Length: 300
Image (cartoon, rainbow, N blue to C red):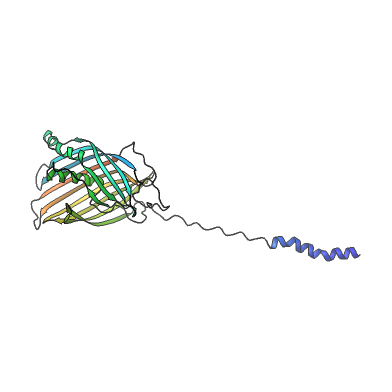
């Protein structure tokens, strides 16, 4: 009987011991909630020092007095090479560029002949500029020797500006952009004569992110420009298409078409029109390495 009583007395302790591990088991920690990524893509330029790229370029420039039946045409096709020579502390890139294998085109033998001197200047010009992640080109330089007259220098610089996107302000919005969305760029760009500012251009451009396929972001642009320089009034339009390799941070294609009218101040008659059409396409053999980022897609 004593053993029986002892056994009964020990039952509560046994049950308590059996229950203890269950009652004191740690509660599972709640899993952290990972928020979905914000919608849209960050569209930007990026690169690394000594990164090189090459492209194929086609340029057509038509110039005429307002009201003329046929414009004067100068047209060229050539190769283009550029190198990021420096990454600056602010994240912008210093780039140098050159044109190679310049071929003169044109609608007539005379136009081809007249284009030869510009073709030679294009072959010799050495371009340099700074560009930031949003595509703003600054400190653009395209120097030529005194061998060339002012008209050839002006035409050579005009072509180089359109190839490299100079004097248009930024391309990209600083935030994330969803496909089918539009952003507006307004930019005032000084017109220079040497180191002297002689006027300004005012750009008002709408950019639309039209589609994304295999990492290539297609962007359409449509806008207007106005301005004044030394008494001459400028008005015009620009439209085109850009294709950006988002991971590599550079263009693979651009097609830009612009029309500009220049008139004496206060006059709505006379003047001349300049039509520029530039196509640039990344050369197939150019490598496209992914650029280093800080994890958000922004250039380091």
